[in-house]
Each structure stands twice: as structure tokens, then as C-alpha cells.
Length: 238
Image (cartoon, rainbow, N blue to C red):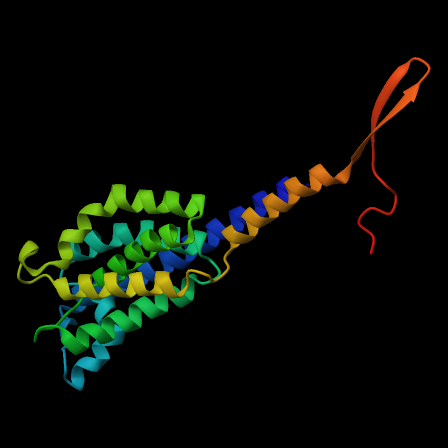
């Protein structure tokens, strides 16, 4: 019964993660579809640093992409990283996502070069760096496995934070700001309890409980010594 409940809980967590991430990706594709259908570019709604008009881009900039290829290049990592984030960190995933979204956007507005910055790459770098460093800081086996996955799949992304390593029209500032926010959030939330912590502690407690449930006793009889295990009736009562 306990295994069935746990299986159902994991299934619900995965479904929640998939629904949340796909919903966000769907918004990105709907916006691009509207652009294509109307022939109107929304690039002017990107982040334009240090201008009053550009502050709107903190909200709208990550939703807008230059072309289909730009959108596809962000869609795949958003799906992968987003599902990992919302599955393993489901208790704090929305909070982490919003912090990455807003703080990276503000920092881009504050320090980036004078150009319109669009696209969700800041989110991609933010989630990747959070997942990697959070797993290391928490020293949890499942989360460190996630960190390993990030290195294997997205380790090459580190070059994207350097201006000379990407094309001039690519916002390396978005990559850098997103990565920095992810690192800071991994540190700030390193002690915030998540389901993984609860499951690991429950597993440890259950093992201890199994060892303590029964006591061993040996009695001598006419035919030799007899060893048996018993559980006191008042065990566990206060």
C-alpha cells in the first residue's frame, strides 16, 4: 500500500512538472505564431537597457524570439531543465523560476549593452546553473545525479557567457546574468526543504525503526538455549 501511494505521488509530481513546463513553452510558441500570422515583429518589446521603455522587456523580453530557429534552440533545453526543476524541486520550483525570470531580466536592463535583448536563454542558463550548483551544495545523491546530467548535456553552455565565444547578435549578457542568478539562488535555497529531503529522512527513519521494532532474548531450557525476538506491547507509547 505504501509503495502504491509513493508511486502515485511520484506520478503526480511528474505530471505537474510536465504540465507546468509545457504550458510555458506553449505561450512562447503562441506568441511566435501571432508574430508570423500578423507579420509584426515584437522585438521592440525586448529589454532595452537603462531606458524607461526597456523596463517592460523585463517581463516581455524572455517571451519573444527572433525567429523559429531561435525559439527551437530554447524550447528543447527549457523542456528538459524545466521538468527537472519542477520535478525535483516542486515545492520551490515556481519561486525559483520567477526569481530567475525577474532578477536576470533586471540585471540585463542594468548592465547589458545598448540593444534589444530577447529570448528565454537567460532562463535556460538560470535553471541549468541552479540545478547544477544546488545538487552539489545539498549533497543529495539524487540531486547530484541531476548535476551530472547537467554537465553531460549542457556543459558546453559555459562558453555562452563570454562575449567572444558567441555571435555578436547573441545576448551573452542574458546567459551570464541567468547563470549568476541560478548560482545565487542555489546558495540561498540550499537549506530549504524539498521532497527529496523528506524522502531520504523517511527512509533513514524507517530503517532505524525496523532495527528497533523487535528485541532479542535468549533463554536456557532443558534442551539448550532458545533465541527469540519479541516486541513489547507498550513499544512506541508515550
